[in-house]
Image (cartoon, rainbow, N blue to C red; front, side):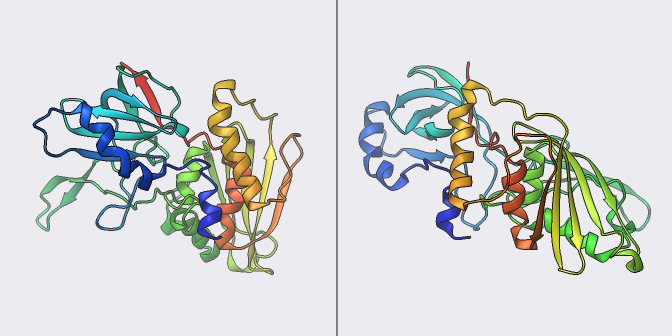
Length: 309
């Protein structure tokens, strides 16, 4: 897939070049006359790479709305006079007014337990003499999340199943920021089960991973199975109930983005308007992100949350 196709996931990205050219004029009336410098950063759906080349999940912040244009809102960070945030209006869920004090919560990747992937983790370590100590681990940018499997990976006997699990955890989603595992988190994937056959049973009992999802696009069970003969995957979806209707206030933020994806990718996947099972065959490993996006990603993660304080 080309970069052009990937960018169609986000129909209205900020024109950062144009904003930078006019920013000094916009900010000048907002800072003290003796202020010689100002700082700004963009709050878009996908964060910019840092100096090391990876993208960090942005933290929530508070500030005061100082300007609203057709494409962005300008927020002066709380406790500062010359630090500003430029937020993309296309993805905010609640448009504030100039003068409002707000809390901005950008999208951040999460683990299946609901915690951010960059949240500090305490690990108990043991010295050679048996003495234990607690270390705090923090990973900034680029970390995936492990699937909540019913058994540890080291107990899986089928190498093809283990490879599928690693592909779901390591391969990127279409947006280039998330991995497929994050896509599953955002789709509400739960209740993971495995079929882990012996080598002699791989044809009659294909290795597979199954899980349930529940969102506005699909509520039901999804199974990804390995087809040994074709060396590809088969994705099956069995809806359990009719998909829930999208809320009126979410249509501009979700429905448009999903329609853009389907149109740009020219998908042929049947819509889940009925409870009939869906089967997608001949899925190569590098198409897993695409096919799962078409099937279970309702786009609701594409929001920057705004709370008026």
